[in-house]
Length: 60
Image (cartoon, rainbow, N blue to C red; front, side, top):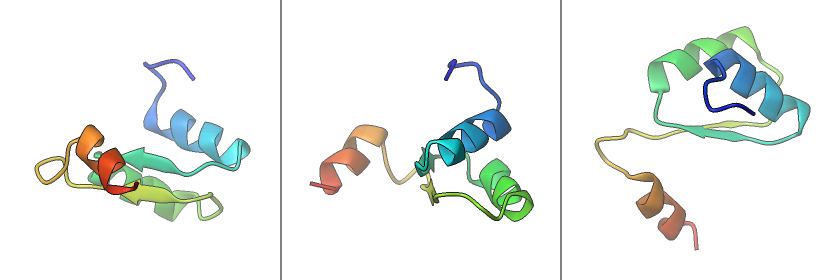
């Protein structure tokens, strides 16, 4: 997936591969989740609370 892919393209690509998507972009992905009800999951995190590295570390 190209880094410049739109939010919609990223969600649809993840869905096609059966993968969930992690994002700090809460507002846009809530709207996409309401448009595309069939997806493998969207993990939303407030960027002010988490960095990606801290979130990954907390999973293990």
